[in-house]
Amino acid sequence: MTSTFSPSDASRPFLAWQGILDWAQEHYRYRAFSKDERIPARTGLLYLVQQGLVRLVGTSEVTSNKTHLSFRLSQQSNDEAFLGFVGIGQPFEIVAPSPFILDAYAHIDRTSVVWLYWNELDNWPLFRREVMEAFRYQHQRKLLWLTTLGQKQTIDRLLGFLTLLIEEFGEPCDRGYFLPFPITHAQVGSAIGATRVTVTRLMGKLRQRKLIYVQDDHLICLPAFTPRIGRGGPQVG
Amino acid sequence: MTSTFSPSDASRPFLAWQGILDWAQEHYRYRAFSKDERIPARTGLLYLVQQGLVRLVGTSEVTSNKTHLSFRLSQQSNDEAFLGFVGIGQPFEIVAPSPFILDAYAHIDRTSVVWLYWNELDNWPLFRREVMEAFRYQHQRKLLWLTTLGQKQTIDRLLGFLTLLIEEFGEPCDRGYFLPFPITHAQVGSAIGATRVTVTRLMGKLRQRKLIYVQDDHLICLPAFTPRIGRGGPQVG
Image (cartoon, rainbow over all chains, first blue to last red):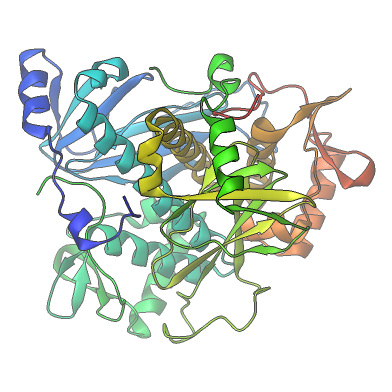
């Protein structure tokens, strides 16, 4: 078993995927969500994206001004951070010790998830292995994400962030690769520690320098310069 | 199998740890490093920290100014980001597709690591499972880290970052919990996207507000307010 990121790994389907889906339907472990609807995910369960796209967000109650016992007042807190997308065939889980809160939302319409208890995975050892490989892959991606967020200039963090997103979720287009779903400037800002206004301004700069393009419907496109582009990680074929 | 973060999980030793160490010594898969020495880790191998502490750093070549084919000119690049520590009994691996570079360094003297090829783990299925659980745990921690880095105010990112570090690696002291090894302001800055100067200034503010203390030898200490503190994840007991 070598590290992921190779095309053979990228196209590898979950071996027991159909069996899991059938089982989940039979056991009422399936639910569909509409765009921006919160997925009431609980700690201790494993979730799998069956259709659509899931958006993970985090809220930190560690601030230098407020008490650490404060509670979030609203779901749409300004300090909610975008933590990434989870695509079809990928697992996610919600583990957030105080003072952190993680939440999952359907990013697009017709997003559906199934869920299992971790011990139920013992019935499908090969599938369990695939899930763990998927988390290993997601961890690798987050290290790259952190690499970008350590850059001093906000515009570099922005470009690095978009590059990573499109590397993982992008689809080919005339000019290069584009992100096939919308993401708001506020969401981008919440990932890179910048305001929506700053993101809008810097996106303009990146467009001027022809480092990004914006397609119809505000889809973000990167010119084809990156050596390796492609969906990575275990995924439904 | 439930999610990690519980004390029982935290104290769980690697089951086959001694066997792995003996095997690694026999097969010359062991090496010690001095402080800040680079560990020449290669893609496709799994590394385990036997003694000391490993520091992961990342370099992104995605910038809005330079060409994407640029190469790093120095190991001590200003845009090297601190990605986290790997403690005793924890695994790490170096997977970095272009245009990202990951590196591992010994953070303190007498740091030693052993390494294996992934397929060799098939000989120790229980150990393999522990390694994958450790990566799953590390992934969970990185999501919290990203939550903190999404905060708009640099001082909040700083406090959140220190809280996470001390939550994971802290040891009890009179006033609360302290990080039992030094970390430079430049390293902290490279994690949260700030300069060394900014970190020094904001650390002063946090000390004034009594949100952090600094012990002898510049060790950072958090007062004991955080509900859950403790080393987490699989680790040598």
